[in-house]
Image 1 (tube, helix red, strand yellow):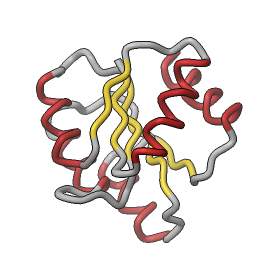
Image 2 (cartoon, rainbow, N blue to C red):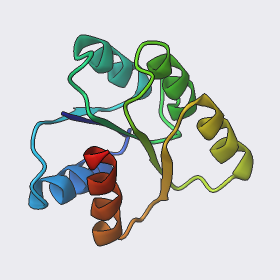
Image 3 (tube, rainbow, N blue to C red):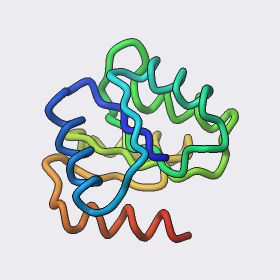
Length: 120
């Protein structure tokens, strides 16, 4: 199961469609960080990858990483964002982010990263 969290409906659709077109199924979506946290807690042990935006309402992506890591120490977390600020990237890594992909993303490279993380 892959959990995608982004407050942009368009980005959610693009990410989900990119994953589905490349054979990934069982995808759940959240429109903000708080909803993502609730879904993650509901599906503990079933999520194999998180794809999170940094800037979201109710709970931002970096705070969400910290919350997720409190009960899920090993599932890969990809930050998918327009954010390029080095301090935010560093903070995300400190909290446990696995990778950082800048929007708009190249679909082929995105799928390569996802495939690599899910094989580990």
